[in-house]
Amino acid sequence: MLSLQQPQTFVNLLCGVHDYVWIGLTDAVTEGIWKWVDGTPLTTAYWRSGQPDGGEDCSYFYSWSSDRRM
Image (cartoon, rainbow, N blue to C red; front, side):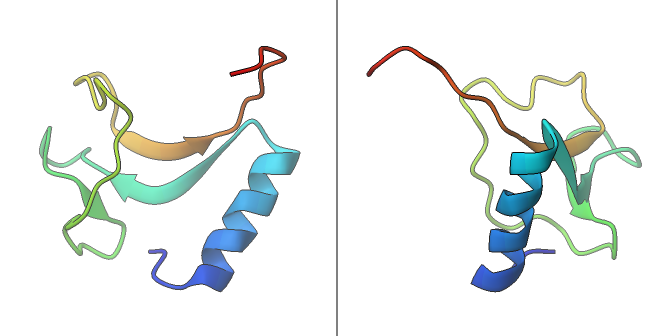
């Protein structure tokens, strides 16, 4: 569970090494009920638009870059 800036910064660094990093959040027990691996329910979510779409059991950070300028 990420509740401090320091661990979140560590995960961001991992995303620089790997394309994605599992953050310990899952709905494998009950579809649509997201919990951390310690059983704590998810209270605040910052899902990408349209996510989760019902086909996942794990939540992860995904890192990508684009050459396109915004």
